Image 1 (cartoon, rainbow, N blue to C red):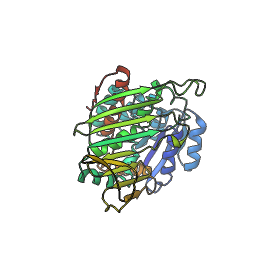
Image 2: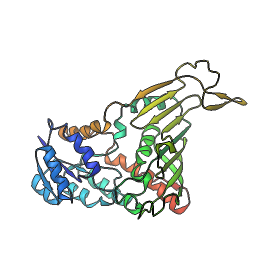
Image 3: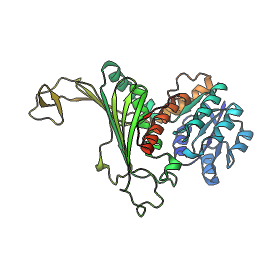
Image 4: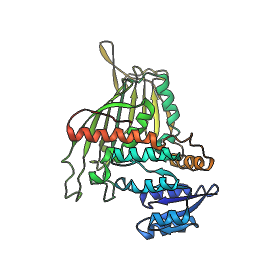
Length: 352
């Protein structure tokens, strides 16, 4: 049986650990590492197997795992990946892959040279909402995409400092950027405005990132898009976060890992006044008709993690939907937004 180890037993590590406990029929949970020993020890107790460590290099030397899940903060990437590559260990790395694209390129190249199986934590690609969404995009000419993610400030100390987290677009809303790219293909250019001043240092001591950003995107296909994200929210009432894929006569509204609603594919029922207006001819008419609704089923992360584990067991990584090489492009997409915010200029997305 192949051996699995994890580096980082904090919040996102705990998310994956909940999945691992469902896979003990196919993989041995052999090593758990965290700089806070109690965290690693708690994982070992939950697994009922393996050993806890505070030094990942010692763990790699003693356990000799076949695969490792890297669940560390964004600023901690680099040395861990190169040590795994040197040892020929397959790895799953949480997003974002790194905060330096040159570093991510080096990791990408080194992993490919060793023919390692890799994956990244874009679990939204494994949602049961993905296939009907992709079918909608395939069968209809999308003209415009609009996306939003508005939330609050996560509790991790590093998140509120942009140089450690990358900011909200890079660390959180990358899921929206990624699923849009998965549906529509690669972006060509972005222009991003950032805004601050809504969240005070009294409210969040040490806070140093963008409260809000809005990005205009030009895709290689010609589709235009707007993606906005903010951490200024005190309530879910502040905004209805979703992705809208708009065609000339239909739309699909995706709430990631929630629902997919497709409007325009059911016959329109007569309505005196329906919500939402579209332009037709020389006037505005109300959009009518019911939506086709798909709902999220289960935890997409379970399938995401199991797919990687099964790939390592079989030696075939073809079913992994977001290997390192592809995940790099989504990181590059969001990092281009940061560059645009910093320079005040449009930025070409460096996908290679």
